[in-house]
Length: 558
Image 1 (spheres, rainbow, N blue to C red):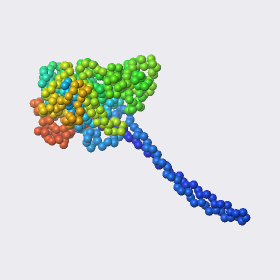
Image 2: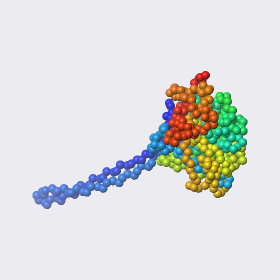
Image 3: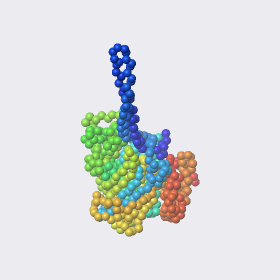
Image 4: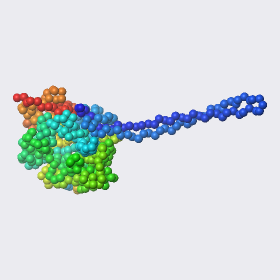
C-alpha cells in the first residue's frame, strides 16, 4: 500500500437537524341531539370540524460531532472543508509556499523571536499502545511510515506503526564575525548543511544514523571536525511547548564518512551541553517504562486509543517540570512497576506518551517559549495559526550558543515542519540578516524595549513584521548545488523510473560564492532576480520537493 502523498488529518463537522413534528388532526364535532318521543326524529346533523391542531415545535439542533480517524499507517486522509491551507486557493498538493511572519525584539539581557504561520495543531508525538495483548510503539514521520510499508530499511525506520509526528519550527543562526563561523551562510543558508547522505536523501542508508545534517569543515572558518558552528533554536509543539520551553541545539562541522556508522545518530545536529527538556521511554521486557500517574489524571494510568484526539493527557511530565508550562499542573509519570503494585493491569487500547517532558538543564535548556499560542481555524481545532515566541539570554556564556550583541548583525535561516513531514519535506527560507537594534539595514531589525528577563517581552503590536516566503527544497543538496553530483557521476531514478536531472546551471556561481537569491526567487509571481533562473515554487518539484518518492541511486557513470 502506498501513502497518498498529500493526505492529511481533518475533522468533519456533522450537524444534525430534527424533523419538524407534524401538526395534530382536529377533534370530531359533537353529535346532534336525539329526536322527541313518538315518531323517530331525523338524525342530528354532524357538528362542524374542529380547528387544525398547532404545528409541533422544531426539534433541537444536534450537537457538533467530531469524526477524526485515528492515526494509521497510511497517514492522514480527511475531508478538508477550508478553502485553502496557507493562503493560496489551491489544495496542499500545489501549496508549495508557506508565508511566515517574523518579529524580533530585545531588552537589557534577553532576545525575543515571534514567528507566525498557518499549519496543523501538531502537538502529539509518539506513543506506546497496548493492543492484541502486547505493547507496541506508535508514531513517526511520513517517510519512515513509507519505509515500513515498503519494508525498506534503507529508506527509514521500520518500527513506525502510524504517522504521529509533532509540528516544529527552527531558527538557524550564524555569527559572521565570530572566530568560528560558517562561510557563505548568508549566501546559501541551510543548503550548506544538506547532503546526499542526509536522512531521507537518495544515498542515505541506515548505517548513517538518524540525522545526517552537518557542515563540511572546509565551509567553516576557524573550525575543525566536531566544532559547533551554527546555533539552532528548535521549538517543538509536543516535546517542549506544553511546559513553555524550546530545545537549544547546534550544528557541527563534520568530516562525515558515509555508511560507516552503526545506525546511531552520526550527523551534525546535536543538543547543546546539558539535559534536554524531554526524555524518551521504551518498551522494556514487554512493558513501557512509565505510565500516567493517576494522582495527576483523576485516576487514569493510561488513556484509550479511541480517545486519542480528545484526551487531555496526550503528554506527561517529570516532577521538575510539573509547574513549568501554561497547562500546569501537568499530567505526571509513574514507573510501570509502581503502577502494577497499585493494581494496574493493561487492557486493550491503553495508550501512554513515549516522550516525557522535564525541566532540562545546562545550555540545552536556555530557551523558553513564553507567550506561544495556537489560534484554531477549524471546528475541531486541528488547523490554525501558530504564534511561536522564543526567548533566550543575549549572551548565555555557552560556547554552543551565538552571543547576541547590541549593534551587531547576524545571519539566520528559518524552517517549518508540518503534516508529519520532516527532513527534506520541511519548509525553509533563503538566509536573511538580522540586527540587534534598528537602523543597520538588516532584513529583520530587532527593536530595543525596556525591561529585563524573558518574561518582560514586547507589545508585539508595536514591533514590525517581516513577511518571509518559505519553500520546500527537495533533494537540492550541497553536492547538487556545487555540481559535485555531475563530477562524481551521480544518477538517480524517480518513482516512474525517469532519470532525475543532476545538472545545476548555477553550480559555477555557487562555487564562486554567488547568493541563491541572485538567480532565484521564491514564488513564480515574485519579481525576477538579477540573473533569472526560475522560482523555487516551480523548481522544487523537479527535485522531489513536493512529498514525492525518494529517488533511487543507480550505478554511477564514469
